[in-house]
Image 1 (tube, helix red, strand yellow):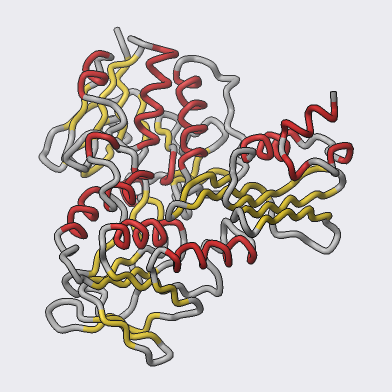
Image 2 (spheres, one colour):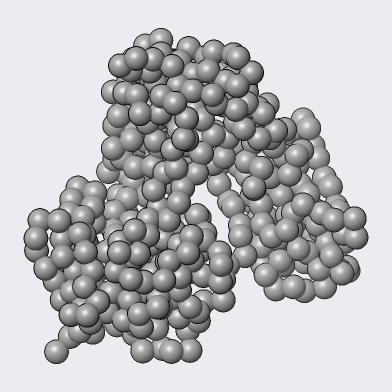
Length: 405
């Protein structure tokens, strides 16, 4: 008789986990996947493309209904889980339905952080996290509409790009002195700034929000410097936090996220966590790739391979923001003892920065041309001596490998 396995959350991490599990242990578990959103899982990375009208909703669906049904997986959409009873090993849904489990996987993802400033509760203050947010923005994207996006990280830039592409007049407000400060160095961030401005987005850096203006609905945003930006709606995209309250209520160990060990188990050996809700060795990853790595390890472990362990992820960002390709990995902010290789072709809009410590590549930033990003990532993860490639390292694997041969 198959064991009962319940997955709470039906996002990208949960979908990859079920996919991997079916490859390793098809038929071993009776799987139920519970999702709070009233639809099957979809690719959140493409939300800005959806907002811009570049793709439709069908294009961002991860797996069709037939895929789940064909693997015997029961999917429950539009139902939140109200409680986890670890004593009797059962979960209770908001509608009162109760399901037993022998193994439980938490893939609850994250929730958007909203600024604690006056006016953030006004009508037309939105977040940018799911399809419902996209629908809300589309409802406000009339001709001549004005929007303020708060946050110059990945989410904020994606929202600004999607809105501007759809014809909205956008002002992006960022507290820090450069865009995407966690993923880019100062030069790459400056290049990105100019690329964003060229697409018609006004960008205000070192700008601190004082309050959202309006009585019943948004009319604008006031900054601490006194400047007022007129707006019909405001999008707050300053970051995310792990969705961990359900685990906390169940008595599981929760710090910033749901604490897990190298086997992705929580403080309860029958309960596991992966993706944006999980905290491993003090790190909470808000990126897709670590979630997929965790999903793969957990699928192997639940199929009986106890040698599968998750040792953490080397942070890497490989994406297209506002139509510009970006890549960063490892420790790209150099120290005084590091060697730095720089390459820039202003005419082609290409910038590369490689940081070397003790003859080993430890960090990389690429702007405009990211084709060699995964090769640099392999070098960073592998820790190989690159001193013999120093003269050609910035030109990618084709030249480097031909010289090595």
